[in-house]
Amino acid sequence: MTLRTRLTAWYAGVFLIAGIALVGLNYWFLADWVVPAAGVAAAPVGGTAVQRTVPLETMQTLEVSSLPADAVVWSPAAVKSDVMTTVLWQSAIALVVAAIIAVWLGWVVAGRVLAPLHSITSTAHRLEAERLDQRIELDGPPDELKELADTFDGMLDRLASSFDSQKRFVANASHELRTPLAVQRTLIEVALGAPDASDDIRRLGAHLLDTNERSEKLIDGLLLLARSDRGLATRELVWLDEVIDDEIESCEALAAEKKVTFAVRTRRYLVDGDPVLLAHLVGNLLRNALLYNKPGGTVSVELDRELTVTNTGPTVPAQAVPGLFEPFRRLRDRTGTAGSGLGLSIVQSVARAHQGSAKARPNGGGGLVVQVNLPETGVRQPS
Image (cartoon, rainbow, N blue to C red; front, top):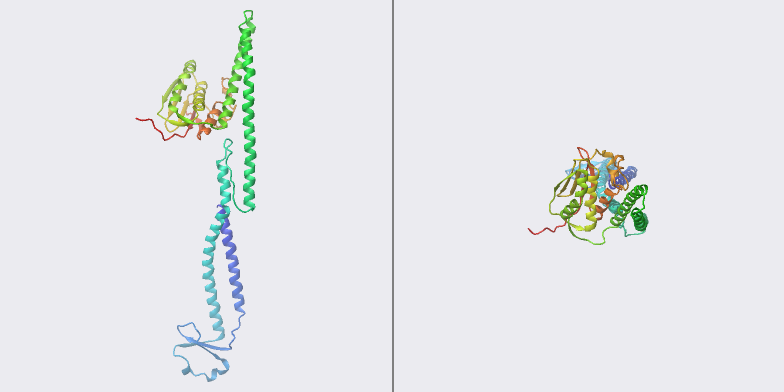
């Protein structure tokens, strides 16, 4: 039962209790009423209006011929009983009608009172960590609901400021770390190029270069994640199917190394967005599908209503799938790969930046199925 229904029920219940109490009080007062005339009343048989009241002391002189032919004679007790019965039934009917009107008015008033709460709820539903620009901005008198809405807006301001500060910190820190990593790589390469470098130094240098490369990939991933989290500064029309073809071509060497084949089925698909971020989205999906695959496996790429990438890697537990979209979260059997744990996080962030979504589920024969929904524009290529 909704809050609006409960408020209406409470309002109608209180109204009925008050109405019944009022009718009962009136009936009790009417029960103490004494008929002023200590006599009898005469009225037509089919009528309700008393035509004549005759005092009791003159009853012995009252002649039947003096009354109308269709008259009946009521005693004071009968008049009182008839009045009380009429008042009771009319009050009951009026109370039922008034209760129906009260329920309708209660429903309308409860809706108007709860309208600000619906606004707060709808705003909360639209909020995400990457979209904290929604505000209620409730207009009205300074009552409790206005205070609640203002408090909610203030909380959103603080959260937005905190998230922006965090994103700026990640972007700035990642950017600052790229320079010393580049310097380290240069020094290692110079040391390895020296003619007197021993075999131990060359082995150590190769290991350091590999570690340096991993760190640079991690920094680049953090920068890309921070950029996509901030949203799109500019947009342009991008053919997503062409982006997929380009990224598949760039992954051919890795696919040959992993002995994995591609199965591609796409159609023309136009997206309004950032071509660089979209290329990273597709590239991360393809490289993840290749890295976490098995020799002789396949990577299926389908683009119809959405982009679906399926691989034939090891079995993925269903309960572990949501955690794969979190930064640095990987399955235990994936920790030996060259990935940084940011691939699906970047995919989800880029999809959200394009007002889309990303989800995944285990593949029936092993591996993972990742589905990315990106809004397609209404523009079509001329036939």
